[in-house]
Length: 399
Image (cartoon, rainbow, N blue to C red; front, side):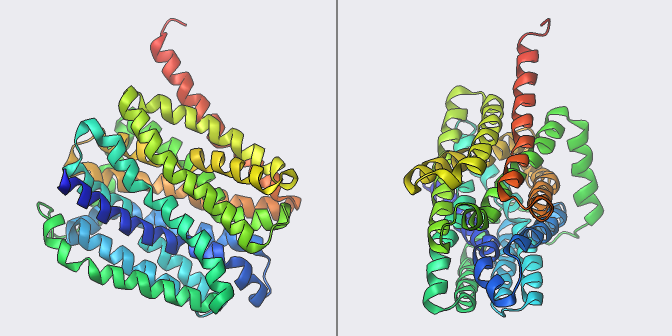
Protein backbone atom coordinates (compact mmCIF):
# COMPACT_ATOMS: atom_id res chain seq x y z
CA UNK A 1 0.00 0.00 0.00
CA UNK A 2 2.90 2.39 0.73
CA UNK A 3 4.07 1.88 -2.84
CA UNK A 4 0.64 2.81 -4.15
CA UNK A 5 0.50 5.93 -1.95
CA UNK A 6 3.96 7.08 -3.04
CA UNK A 7 3.21 6.48 -6.72
CA UNK A 8 -0.09 8.35 -6.56
CA UNK A 9 1.64 11.22 -4.71
CA UNK A 10 4.32 11.55 -7.40
CA UNK A 11 1.86 11.43 -10.30
CA UNK A 12 -0.39 13.89 -8.45
CA UNK A 13 2.45 16.40 -8.03
CA UNK A 14 3.31 16.18 -11.71
CA UNK A 15 -0.32 16.74 -12.69
CA UNK A 16 -0.63 19.76 -10.37
CA UNK A 17 2.43 21.45 -11.87
CA UNK A 18 1.48 20.82 -15.51
CA UNK A 19 -2.13 21.91 -14.94
CA UNK A 20 -1.12 25.09 -13.10
CA UNK A 21 1.18 26.00 -15.97
CA UNK A 22 -1.58 25.35 -18.48
CA UNK A 23 -4.09 27.64 -16.79
CA UNK A 24 -1.56 30.38 -15.99
CA UNK A 25 -2.20 32.08 -19.35
CA UNK A 26 -5.97 32.45 -18.82
CA UNK A 27 -5.51 33.51 -15.18
CA UNK A 28 -3.00 36.20 -16.14
CA UNK A 29 -5.00 37.27 -19.22
CA UNK A 30 -6.69 40.28 -17.54
CA UNK A 31 -3.27 41.67 -16.60
CA UNK A 32 -1.68 40.90 -19.96
CA UNK A 33 -4.71 42.12 -21.89
CA UNK A 34 -4.50 45.52 -20.28
CA UNK A 35 -0.78 45.78 -21.08
CA UNK A 36 -1.15 44.52 -24.65
CA UNK A 37 -4.43 46.39 -25.31
CA UNK A 38 -6.31 43.19 -26.23
CA UNK A 39 -9.88 42.06 -25.56
CA UNK A 40 -9.68 39.55 -22.69
CA UNK A 41 -12.26 37.35 -24.45
CA UNK A 42 -9.54 36.49 -26.96
CA UNK A 43 -8.08 34.16 -24.33
CA UNK A 44 -10.33 31.53 -25.89
CA UNK A 45 -8.03 31.51 -28.91
CA UNK A 46 -5.01 30.92 -26.65
CA UNK A 47 -6.83 28.03 -24.99
CA UNK A 48 -7.86 26.55 -28.35
CA UNK A 49 -4.28 26.74 -29.57
CA UNK A 50 -2.92 25.12 -26.41
CA UNK A 51 -5.37 22.24 -26.37
CA UNK A 52 -5.24 21.66 -30.12
CA UNK A 53 -1.52 21.17 -29.63
CA UNK A 54 -2.22 18.90 -26.65
CA UNK A 55 -4.70 16.86 -28.69
CA UNK A 56 -2.17 16.21 -31.43
CA UNK A 57 0.70 15.48 -29.04
CA UNK A 58 -1.29 13.22 -26.71
CA UNK A 59 -2.33 11.07 -29.66
CA UNK A 60 1.37 10.26 -30.13
CA UNK A 61 1.94 9.45 -26.46
CA UNK A 62 2.59 5.81 -27.26
CA UNK A 63 5.77 6.82 -29.08
CA UNK A 64 6.89 9.01 -26.15
CA UNK A 65 6.29 6.18 -23.70
CA UNK A 66 8.15 3.66 -25.82
CA UNK A 67 11.15 5.94 -26.14
CA UNK A 68 11.40 7.60 -22.73
CA UNK A 69 9.25 5.53 -20.34
CA UNK A 70 6.41 7.01 -18.27
CA UNK A 71 8.60 8.95 -15.82
CA UNK A 72 10.97 10.21 -18.50
CA UNK A 73 7.90 11.36 -20.44
CA UNK A 74 6.57 13.07 -17.32
CA UNK A 75 9.83 14.96 -16.87
CA UNK A 76 9.68 16.16 -20.47
CA UNK A 77 6.11 17.33 -19.89
CA UNK A 78 7.22 19.34 -16.87
CA UNK A 79 10.08 20.84 -18.86
CA UNK A 80 7.74 22.05 -21.61
CA UNK A 81 5.26 23.35 -19.00
CA UNK A 82 7.99 25.35 -17.27
CA UNK A 83 9.24 26.77 -20.55
CA UNK A 84 5.70 27.84 -21.45
CA UNK A 85 5.60 30.05 -18.36
CA UNK A 86 8.98 31.54 -19.21
CA UNK A 87 7.65 32.38 -22.69
CA UNK A 88 4.56 34.06 -21.21
CA UNK A 89 6.77 36.07 -18.87
CA UNK A 90 8.25 37.94 -21.88
CA UNK A 91 5.05 40.00 -21.89
CA UNK A 92 4.63 39.89 -25.66
CA UNK A 93 1.87 38.57 -27.93
CA UNK A 94 4.33 36.16 -29.53
CA UNK A 95 5.44 35.03 -26.08
CA UNK A 96 1.85 34.15 -25.23
CA UNK A 97 1.47 32.25 -28.52
CA UNK A 98 4.67 30.29 -27.87
CA UNK A 99 3.58 29.72 -24.28
CA UNK A 100 0.31 28.17 -25.43
CA UNK A 101 2.15 25.90 -27.85
CA UNK A 102 4.67 24.72 -25.24
CA UNK A 103 1.96 24.26 -22.59
CA UNK A 104 0.03 22.06 -25.00
CA UNK A 105 3.08 19.87 -25.64
CA UNK A 106 3.59 19.50 -21.90
CA UNK A 107 -0.06 18.86 -21.11
CA UNK A 108 -0.66 16.18 -23.72
CA UNK A 109 1.31 13.08 -22.63
CA UNK A 110 1.03 13.68 -18.87
CA UNK A 111 -2.14 11.65 -18.34
CA UNK A 112 -1.16 8.71 -20.58
CA UNK A 113 2.20 8.51 -18.76
CA UNK A 114 0.59 8.44 -15.33
CA UNK A 115 -2.02 5.93 -16.54
CA UNK A 116 0.75 3.45 -17.33
CA UNK A 117 2.24 3.84 -13.86
CA UNK A 118 -1.10 3.64 -12.05
CA UNK A 119 -2.31 0.65 -14.09
CA UNK A 120 0.65 -1.33 -12.69
CA UNK A 121 -0.05 -0.54 -9.04
CA UNK A 122 -3.80 0.01 -8.94
CA UNK A 123 -5.85 -2.81 -7.46
CA UNK A 124 -9.09 -3.34 -9.40
CA UNK A 125 -11.16 -2.82 -6.27
CA UNK A 126 -9.85 0.75 -5.91
CA UNK A 127 -9.18 1.56 -9.58
CA UNK A 128 -11.64 4.45 -9.85
CA UNK A 129 -10.47 5.97 -6.57
CA UNK A 130 -6.75 5.73 -7.46
CA UNK A 131 -7.22 7.32 -10.85
CA UNK A 132 -9.57 9.95 -9.39
CA UNK A 133 -7.10 10.94 -6.67
CA UNK A 134 -4.34 11.37 -9.24
CA UNK A 135 -6.67 13.35 -11.48
CA UNK A 136 -7.43 15.77 -8.64
CA UNK A 137 -4.08 17.22 -9.66
CA UNK A 138 -5.83 18.91 -12.61
CA UNK A 139 -8.31 21.02 -10.59
CA UNK A 140 -5.72 21.17 -7.79
CA UNK A 141 -3.24 22.85 -10.11
CA UNK A 142 -5.96 25.06 -11.55
CA UNK A 143 -7.09 26.03 -8.06
CA UNK A 144 -3.57 26.88 -6.98
CA UNK A 145 -3.00 29.03 -10.06
CA UNK A 146 -6.36 30.79 -9.72
CA UNK A 147 -5.87 31.52 -6.03
CA UNK A 148 -2.18 32.46 -6.06
CA UNK A 149 -1.27 34.01 -9.40
CA UNK A 150 -3.58 37.08 -9.31
CA UNK A 151 -2.31 38.07 -5.86
CA UNK A 152 1.28 37.32 -6.82
CA UNK A 153 0.84 39.38 -9.98
CA UNK A 154 -0.37 42.36 -7.94
CA UNK A 155 2.61 42.00 -5.60
CA UNK A 156 5.50 41.51 -8.02
CA UNK A 157 3.96 42.04 -11.47
CA UNK A 158 2.35 39.46 -13.72
CA UNK A 159 5.48 38.80 -15.76
CA UNK A 160 7.56 38.12 -12.65
CA UNK A 161 4.77 35.83 -11.37
CA UNK A 162 4.95 33.80 -14.58
CA UNK A 163 8.75 33.68 -14.47
CA UNK A 164 8.83 32.52 -10.84
CA UNK A 165 6.22 29.83 -11.49
CA UNK A 166 8.08 28.57 -14.53
CA UNK A 167 11.30 28.23 -12.59
CA UNK A 168 9.51 26.22 -9.89
CA UNK A 169 8.14 23.76 -12.48
CA UNK A 170 11.59 23.25 -14.00
CA UNK A 171 13.05 22.55 -10.54
CA UNK A 172 10.39 19.87 -10.00
CA UNK A 173 11.29 18.26 -13.34
CA UNK A 174 14.92 17.95 -12.27
CA UNK A 175 14.00 16.69 -8.79
CA UNK A 176 12.19 13.65 -10.23
CA UNK A 177 15.34 12.21 -11.82
CA UNK A 178 16.17 9.84 -8.90
CA UNK A 179 12.69 8.25 -9.19
CA UNK A 180 12.92 7.31 -12.86
CA UNK A 181 14.49 3.89 -12.39
CA UNK A 182 11.93 2.71 -9.84
CA UNK A 183 8.81 4.01 -11.57
CA UNK A 184 9.95 3.17 -15.10
CA UNK A 185 10.60 -0.44 -14.08
CA UNK A 186 9.11 -2.76 -16.66
CA UNK A 187 8.62 -0.01 -19.22
CA UNK A 188 9.70 -0.67 -22.78
CA UNK A 189 12.20 2.16 -22.87
CA UNK A 190 14.63 2.98 -25.67
CA UNK A 191 12.70 1.11 -28.35
CA UNK A 192 12.46 2.69 -31.75
CA UNK A 193 9.37 4.88 -31.48
CA UNK A 194 7.10 4.37 -34.49
CA UNK A 195 4.64 7.24 -34.73
CA UNK A 196 2.43 5.25 -37.06
CA UNK A 197 2.27 2.24 -34.73
CA UNK A 198 1.78 4.45 -31.68
CA UNK A 199 -1.25 6.22 -33.19
CA UNK A 200 -2.89 4.01 -35.82
CA UNK A 201 -2.96 0.84 -33.70
CA UNK A 202 -4.68 2.40 -30.67
CA UNK A 203 -7.15 4.26 -32.91
CA UNK A 204 -8.13 1.00 -34.56
CA UNK A 205 -8.66 -0.57 -31.15
CA UNK A 206 -10.82 2.34 -30.00
CA UNK A 207 -13.08 2.37 -33.05
CA UNK A 208 -13.36 -1.42 -33.11
CA UNK A 209 -14.59 -1.45 -29.49
CA UNK A 210 -18.03 0.20 -29.10
CA UNK A 211 -17.65 1.13 -25.44
CA UNK A 212 -14.20 2.66 -25.99
CA UNK A 213 -15.49 4.57 -29.00
CA UNK A 214 -18.54 5.88 -27.15
CA UNK A 215 -16.49 6.95 -24.14
CA UNK A 216 -13.88 8.92 -26.06
CA UNK A 217 -16.57 10.70 -28.11
CA UNK A 218 -18.48 11.61 -24.94
CA UNK A 219 -15.29 12.97 -23.40
CA UNK A 220 -15.25 15.75 -26.01
CA UNK A 221 -18.43 17.30 -24.62
CA UNK A 222 -17.45 16.87 -20.98
CA UNK A 223 -13.90 18.11 -21.37
CA UNK A 224 -15.08 21.02 -23.50
CA UNK A 225 -17.35 22.34 -20.76
CA UNK A 226 -14.61 21.77 -18.18
CA UNK A 227 -12.27 23.77 -20.39
CA UNK A 228 -14.78 26.61 -20.66
CA UNK A 229 -15.13 26.71 -16.87
CA UNK A 230 -11.41 26.55 -16.19
CA UNK A 231 -10.19 29.00 -18.80
CA UNK A 232 -12.93 31.59 -19.26
CA UNK A 233 -14.54 31.79 -15.81
CA UNK A 234 -12.36 34.65 -14.57
CA UNK A 235 -13.11 36.78 -17.62
CA UNK A 236 -16.81 35.83 -17.42
CA UNK A 237 -17.05 36.85 -13.76
CA UNK A 238 -15.26 40.14 -14.36
CA UNK A 239 -17.45 41.06 -17.33
CA UNK A 240 -20.84 39.67 -16.26
CA UNK A 241 -20.75 39.62 -12.45
CA UNK A 242 -18.55 42.74 -12.23
CA UNK A 243 -16.11 41.15 -9.78
CA UNK A 244 -12.54 42.35 -9.42
CA UNK A 245 -9.79 40.05 -10.64
CA UNK A 246 -8.84 38.71 -7.19
CA UNK A 247 -12.47 37.88 -6.27
CA UNK A 248 -13.01 36.25 -9.66
CA UNK A 249 -9.85 34.20 -9.13
CA UNK A 250 -11.08 33.05 -5.74
CA UNK A 251 -14.45 31.98 -7.17
CA UNK A 252 -12.63 29.98 -9.82
CA UNK A 253 -10.47 28.48 -7.06
CA UNK A 254 -13.66 27.43 -5.23
CA UNK A 255 -14.92 25.71 -8.39
CA UNK A 256 -11.60 23.95 -8.89
CA UNK A 257 -11.43 23.00 -5.21
CA UNK A 258 -14.87 21.42 -5.48
CA UNK A 259 -13.54 19.56 -8.50
CA UNK A 260 -10.77 18.13 -6.32
CA UNK A 261 -13.27 16.85 -3.77
CA UNK A 262 -15.67 15.75 -6.47
CA UNK A 263 -13.09 13.59 -8.22
CA UNK A 264 -12.39 11.68 -5.03
CA UNK A 265 -16.09 11.46 -4.14
CA UNK A 266 -17.22 10.18 -7.53
CA UNK A 267 -14.31 7.73 -7.63
CA UNK A 268 -15.47 6.26 -4.29
CA UNK A 269 -19.10 6.19 -5.42
CA UNK A 270 -18.17 4.48 -8.69
CA UNK A 271 -16.14 1.83 -6.84
CA UNK A 272 -18.80 1.26 -4.17
CA UNK A 273 -21.74 1.05 -6.58
CA UNK A 274 -19.88 -0.71 -9.37
CA UNK A 275 -21.77 1.52 -11.84
CA UNK A 276 -19.27 4.05 -13.20
CA UNK A 277 -21.19 4.54 -16.45
CA UNK A 278 -24.28 5.60 -14.49
CA UNK A 279 -22.15 8.07 -12.52
CA UNK A 280 -20.73 9.53 -15.74
CA UNK A 281 -24.22 9.98 -17.19
CA UNK A 282 -25.55 11.75 -14.10
CA UNK A 283 -22.48 14.00 -14.00
CA UNK A 284 -23.10 15.07 -17.59
CA UNK A 285 -26.66 16.11 -16.82
CA UNK A 286 -25.63 17.91 -13.65
CA UNK A 287 -22.73 19.86 -15.16
CA UNK A 288 -24.97 21.11 -17.96
CA UNK A 289 -27.62 22.31 -15.52
CA UNK A 290 -25.11 24.05 -13.27
CA UNK A 291 -23.39 25.63 -16.27
CA UNK A 292 -26.64 27.24 -17.40
CA UNK A 293 -27.46 28.28 -13.82
CA UNK A 294 -24.05 29.94 -13.52
CA UNK A 295 -24.45 31.70 -16.85
CA UNK A 296 -27.65 33.47 -15.88
CA UNK A 297 -27.43 33.43 -12.09
CA UNK A 298 -23.91 34.76 -11.48
CA UNK A 299 -24.66 38.46 -12.13
CA UNK A 300 -27.51 38.45 -9.62
CA UNK A 301 -26.10 36.42 -6.73
CA UNK A 302 -24.31 37.62 -3.59
CA UNK A 303 -20.75 36.35 -3.31
CA UNK A 304 -21.46 33.44 -0.89
CA UNK A 305 -24.28 32.13 -3.10
CA UNK A 306 -22.11 32.55 -6.19
CA UNK A 307 -19.35 30.57 -4.50
CA UNK A 308 -21.81 27.78 -3.67
CA UNK A 309 -23.04 27.66 -7.26
CA UNK A 310 -19.46 27.62 -8.53
CA UNK A 311 -18.74 24.70 -6.20
CA UNK A 312 -21.66 22.74 -7.68
CA UNK A 313 -20.50 23.56 -11.21
CA UNK A 314 -16.90 22.61 -10.48
CA UNK A 315 -17.89 19.55 -8.45
CA UNK A 316 -19.44 18.08 -11.60
CA UNK A 317 -17.78 19.63 -14.68
CA UNK A 318 -14.27 19.23 -13.23
CA UNK A 319 -14.88 15.93 -11.43
CA UNK A 320 -15.70 13.32 -14.10
CA UNK A 321 -12.19 12.57 -15.38
CA UNK A 322 -10.96 10.00 -12.87
CA UNK A 323 -13.95 7.72 -13.35
CA UNK A 324 -13.68 8.12 -17.13
CA UNK A 325 -9.96 7.35 -17.24
CA UNK A 326 -10.30 4.36 -14.92
CA UNK A 327 -13.00 2.92 -17.16
CA UNK A 328 -11.00 3.61 -20.30
CA UNK A 329 -7.82 2.03 -18.89
CA UNK A 330 -9.78 -0.87 -17.39
CA UNK A 331 -11.14 -1.91 -20.79
CA UNK A 332 -7.67 -2.85 -22.05
CA UNK A 333 -4.57 -4.63 -20.77
CA UNK A 334 -2.26 -2.52 -18.51
CA UNK A 335 0.43 -2.50 -21.21
CA UNK A 336 -2.04 -0.82 -23.58
CA UNK A 337 -3.39 1.71 -21.08
CA UNK A 338 -1.00 4.54 -21.96
CA UNK A 339 -1.47 4.35 -25.71
CA UNK A 340 -5.27 3.96 -25.49
CA UNK A 341 -5.61 6.87 -23.06
CA UNK A 342 -3.26 8.87 -25.28
CA UNK A 343 -5.20 8.14 -28.47
CA UNK A 344 -8.46 8.89 -26.66
CA UNK A 345 -6.92 12.17 -25.55
CA UNK A 346 -7.10 13.34 -29.17
CA UNK A 347 -10.85 13.62 -28.63
CA UNK A 348 -10.72 14.75 -25.00
CA UNK A 349 -8.29 17.59 -25.69
CA UNK A 350 -10.09 18.28 -28.93
CA UNK A 351 -13.16 19.21 -26.89
CA UNK A 352 -11.11 21.55 -24.71
CA UNK A 353 -9.71 23.16 -27.85
CA UNK A 354 -13.04 23.60 -29.63
CA UNK A 355 -15.43 24.79 -26.93
CA UNK A 356 -13.35 27.67 -25.46
CA UNK A 357 -12.70 28.80 -29.04
CA UNK A 358 -16.45 28.64 -29.68
CA UNK A 359 -16.90 30.66 -26.47
CA UNK A 360 -14.80 33.46 -27.93
CA UNK A 361 -16.70 33.36 -31.22
CA UNK A 362 -20.09 33.51 -29.48
CA UNK A 363 -19.00 36.42 -27.28
CA UNK A 364 -17.65 38.36 -30.24
CA UNK A 365 -20.81 37.65 -32.29
CA UNK A 366 -23.49 38.05 -29.62
CA UNK A 367 -21.72 40.25 -27.09
CA UNK A 368 -22.87 37.99 -24.25
CA UNK A 369 -20.63 35.89 -22.01
CA UNK A 370 -23.74 34.39 -20.37
CA UNK A 371 -25.14 33.17 -23.69
CA UNK A 372 -21.81 31.62 -24.59
CA UNK A 373 -21.60 29.68 -21.31
CA UNK A 374 -25.23 28.53 -21.52
CA UNK A 375 -24.97 27.33 -25.12
CA UNK A 376 -21.76 25.44 -24.46
CA UNK A 377 -23.32 23.69 -21.44
CA UNK A 378 -25.80 21.90 -23.71
CA UNK A 379 -23.49 19.28 -25.31
CA UNK A 380 -22.49 17.85 -21.92
CA UNK A 381 -26.12 17.74 -20.81
CA UNK A 382 -27.09 15.95 -24.02
CA UNK A 383 -24.17 13.54 -23.66
CA UNK A 384 -25.19 12.63 -20.12
CA UNK A 385 -28.78 12.06 -21.19
CA UNK A 386 -27.59 9.88 -24.08
CA UNK A 387 -25.42 7.78 -21.77
CA UNK A 388 -28.31 7.26 -19.32
CA UNK A 389 -30.66 6.39 -22.16
CA UNK A 390 -28.21 3.73 -23.31
CA UNK A 391 -28.12 2.21 -19.83
CA UNK A 392 -31.91 2.20 -19.66
CA UNK A 393 -32.11 0.50 -23.05
CA UNK A 394 -29.64 -2.18 -21.93
CA UNK A 395 -31.62 -2.79 -18.74
CA UNK A 396 -34.96 -2.93 -20.62
CA UNK A 397 -34.17 -4.20 -24.13
CA UNK A 398 -37.86 -4.62 -24.95
CA UNK A 399 -38.84 -1.10 -23.88
